[in-house]
Length: 360
Ligand SMILES: [Fe+2]
Image (cartoon, rainbow, N blue to C red):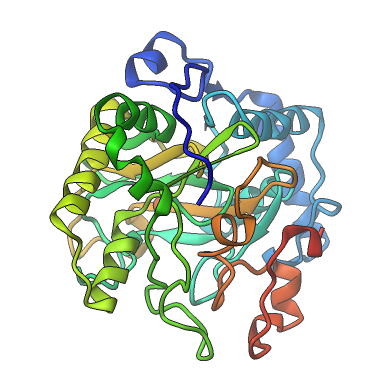
């Protein structure tokens, strides 16, 4: 277990909704130069006849506007507020596949993009998939409210392609602010939070892997002067169900307090088609309101967001990198690069990549 941070963090990473209302520097509206460079990148990959999996930083060119934008995304997620929202990516007039190519191409300039699920999706469709609610089911295939949580890599990107008629709001909250609240109101729970919980693998593990993490993933950890959070109540609840070890009353109270503080300080924002957020999973939680959509809505008119997961070299310090950074991502068909998938490395029995420096 890492050292427990016993003082309040007061830098930009510890924000509240009011802070984001006062200072909107987290938001960037794209201009004609950005749009033109996205179109040029798309034209380049189409001219080369490249599939999405073949796109690299080298063959998806970025002009000066997109290069500056990429530097902004990396900087805004690595430090400061820990996230940014870009508004106005060119989605109108493009097919979903063309949007995937542009989005994926741009993200090659942000970090090392990896697969996210049992299907090895590199760009995952976040949409209603008719998946029934259940304790061992990942939440992104439903219309239900998505509670504030983090994903499995350094950064998550989520691009709005089509919205539902009710335009459910996206919610974001600072994990650092929540740690400040624990410190102020319930410091007695910090040792439990730093000890953490095992996470379930939600049935997405390979045949030779255990159905849940062998170690506990700390809810909070502290290393190199940086606090990191790892919180997804759904995944730790699944682990408790699979182990048949219900949470104690104290653990339930602690997790309820975490959720209540996340909700209290969350900022809710509309996401229009072409808007995308990039969030540091160690400092920023993300979620979404529930929504309604007619069951007979045509597939090409349904709400659709596109998710990309990526690692950023030298992103931050970790107390236990193998567990905190790769413990939940590097299993099954998750955590593989497009090049590794092309080589079939995800099919090699028992072999896992543990460290980013092994592939960059
Ligand atoms: Fe998520």
